[in-house]
Length: 314
Image 1 (cartoon, rainbow, N blue to C red):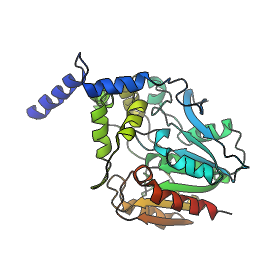
Image 2: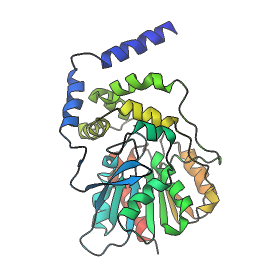
Image 3: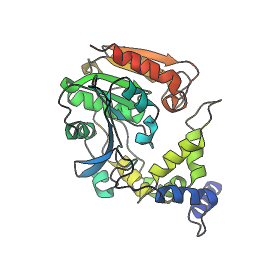
Image 4: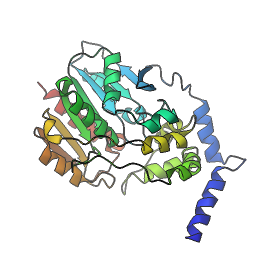
């Protein structure tokens, strides 16, 4: 126990050092190079439940085949869809991707996050801001799969189809748990980790499987989104909020694609199999040998599957 506390103290002191390490300086430089009020040319913000929600919007050159809204996983941002968006646009889809607060460039208001937000309302606020009045395809990766599922349950009449990529969706009918009571003590450690380029790379490597390589440009993108005010405080406040309501999976009757990496250790394939058994109109596609970050590390394999499913929709 004493050794563990000393190790934690050493990590905290390293993160609070007066002279930034080269990796910490790289993270600082990446953060300073982006305007958080307008991080991308296609960026916009919409208010939802008192929070400013960042989203990006792209339109194809011709009349769109439909609209699709993308939601990222834990610790990620709209950056995670950088390989999917061009393929969707080329296929004729109008696309939006949103940063779930407090991630990416969305609001980090600690007080509001601690009170909790209705996860099912956040995606629809983006769709409403874009004037998407017809049916929309909802796509979520990992934690984003839970947001997509909750949104589909709240307004099923607005959902054309559902795509869950390694969706972190409870299959036992119970809401997810919150942060432990001591989570606030971890804020300095969290801040130190996300403000260090090398630490972010280590976190990403923990999501990969043997043989997968995390490229530097991917670490840059994640590190940039992590910078800004109070990431640790905001993350702990968000995770301490009341849990999401339970899902009744049998009510999600829209066409659903379940896309899973065979070697996923973060949201195991068994979750996908259970979801397939509980979702009335679902199909499970397993990607041999791939892990949790398949849409970023193996987009050449993933995009044809996604586009094939979309082209099959009525």
